[in-house]
Image (spheres, rainbow, N blue to C red):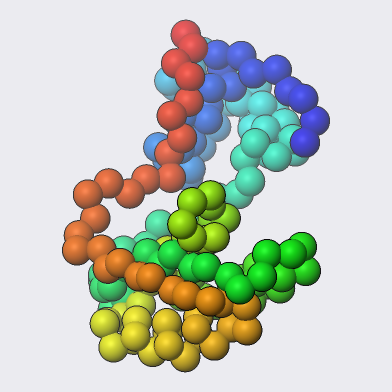
Length: 159
């Protein structure tokens, strides 16, 4: 990623798009002191430099019969570079895993998993996660209810 200088307009555009990624350039121009064409050029620059990675649809998993969210701490048997690449490739192929983070501490990875129900979670852990050749142990925690879930970053407030 190349270096880019952000000004207050860039942050205002990013903040507005985090609230409504479908907002038109004209709509953004109503709240930001730039013309729609200036906003369009800035958005294009932010996309080209990689700050804006894409535009995504947010779905309600509970309304799609995916009512169980679990977090799993995964520890590996081996920790060499090849093992890490192999684990990452295997996790990438599991659609139930929405997020995976390499972490420092008791576990090697934290996973966020979404499945329809508790029996599905059990099958996923036992038949998919635990059968990966590098996995030593899995400790999972079931979420009872979401309190806060956002993808909005806390951008600096520059006016």
